[in-house]
Image (tube, rainbow, N blue to C red; front, top):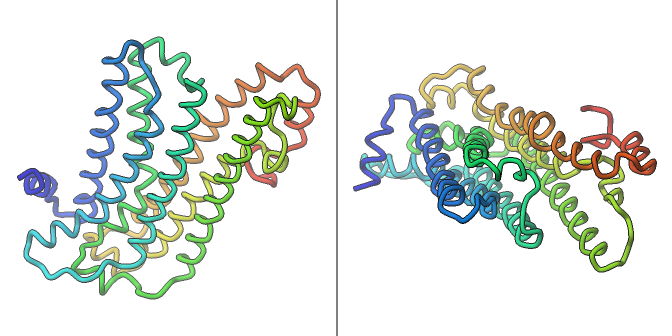
Length: 309
């Protein structure tokens, strides 16, 4: 059976690798399953399903990371304890975030017909495939803290994972909730502003109201904050000695690196690669000649409502 083959091919000595490798493979397989037809089998390369497939891949990877250790234990004939609430909470948080963002972005591309980020890539199929590959990497790296937490063998989870909430749980889940709210509100405000402009309810040429009046990219602020929250909640458990032993005796710095890779990668991509740099170039070319735009850009923090980045 396919499930038995998957378990056999990924039966590494390290419990961490037994979860990381299948999740990484699933991320790339799912992205190429949508990316190759979208690039080579359509009349023109299209990004229509890019964000939707990213959301669905996040959901699949979160579910796979949570239940793969259970399948392994069941295949070995072990009695399965109930899952740790923390594993369910962090996996559910990823699903909630992915469902919200994926739905929003898919509706946006249906409304706009295209995504300007892909204007140059659309002319060259290899460029489109780079984008699909990058999204597979993004899904995998962002979910590393959750994948690692879910990698704790089910037989050991009941004894090594704290049953009561830690301070890092409260802080981490609080940051996730805050980031999700900020990102959701920013997206809603931007959509409402665009709809109002199309309905001739205002004549503003760029968005500078609501959350966009306190920082120029509140949706990216929310994105970085929520992944920092999930990493914080995961790191508070992953660095505990019993959990390190259950994951194959990994070092605390390794566990910490796995957890922090997610917010670090998210911040890097959004501030240095495809988020803010692409948006700023687009907005500067459109509105750079306007004094009101220059004043908003000069007086409004870029990412957070205070001078940090």
